[in-house]
Amino acid sequence: MNADSYIHGNSFYHRFDVRPKLLFTLLYIIIAFMISSWYGLLLAAALPVLVLMHAAGAREALSSIRRLLPVVILLYLFMPLQSRDGIPLLSIGSAVIVTEEGFLTAFRISMRFIALSSVLMLLIATTRSGTIIAGLRFYRLPYNASLLLSILLRFIPYLGALFSQIRDSMSLRLQEGKRGFPIMPSVTAFIVAAVRMIPDTASALEERGFGRPGASDAMRLGNAPHLFTQFVFGAILPLIFMIAVR
Image 1 (cartoon, one colour):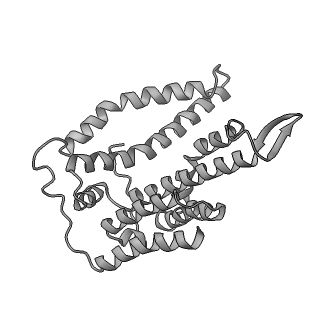
Image 2 (cartoon, rainbow, N blue to C red):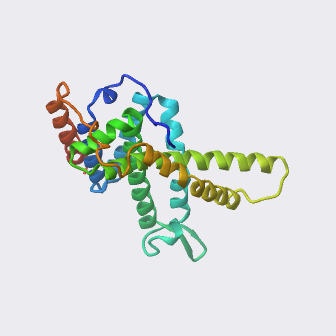
Image 3 (cartoon, rainbow, N blue to C red):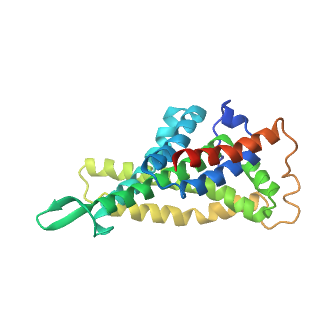
């Protein structure tokens, strides 16, 4: 988790300055929660995934999206508990299992979740963590808060990768004939590993100057070529997208 999640590349998103990237990311997340049409939500989830495939490669993009699948699958598994009243889509006898309203609710939540996660993955895959901190400092965010947000952005994808590794390990043990249930042992091992990471996280914060006065003096961004144009694109493109699909 202490390692940078940056993936070296020369895509157009890599060449964007971090300040308009942060503005674009924030606006995109807000707009993803404002879109209500099903095709708009589908496009909102697909667009950052396609850009991530271009910037980081199809393999890395698909690997990142695969980490989100367990959460998405759980959303649809819990559909019978959502919106019990409405047009039934699946029934067993007189018991309604899935309603149209429940399916649409799960669809909206899953698409927004994928859109939010993908645009954040796109940011951390194309921007170094130190640069993200400097960009947050540009928006007058305190250094300690900027540092925490920067580590949090890398912490969430790391947890997804960690759970995938634990799940694969448990699956191999079951194939060897050992007893156990694949879900509960995986969750238990995941919680233990997450708790054991607390000292490492504290060490990472300390190494980056958390709580030390003057630690953020070097975190400054200078002028970049076409910075104003990048700000315009970072602000206008999400708005155009919302107007087009809403």
